[in-house]
Length: 131
Image 1 (cartoon, rainbow, N blue to C red):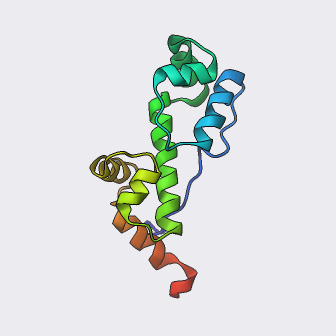
Image 2: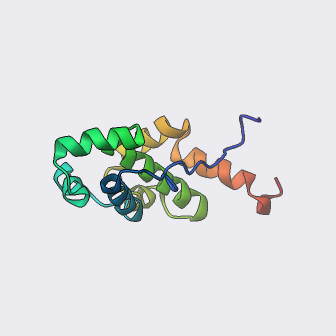
């Protein structure tokens, strides 16, 4: 595989879990990954205590709720960067990152590229650009 090619992974889009409380929460998180959620709100959505939510969420997904929402937000940012010409600060806001510096750090940690470099790479691979 050519390391210069970016392959979109949507691991969180179709995640199915057997735990109905966690499944209910995941569906809500996927609908609005940019929303601000507190642990109290997540617990209410899942209809679980915070302790039970943390334990069952990790069992069902292999990550914490905070890690999972960050993945969803990075995926949203990837889509926005690839499919729009919105300024990066607006992409950060729409994806749920309140601070563009935090967005830049989180995006680079997750993808190995800055948001600007990611967009340039995607655009250079676009069939419209003759690649």
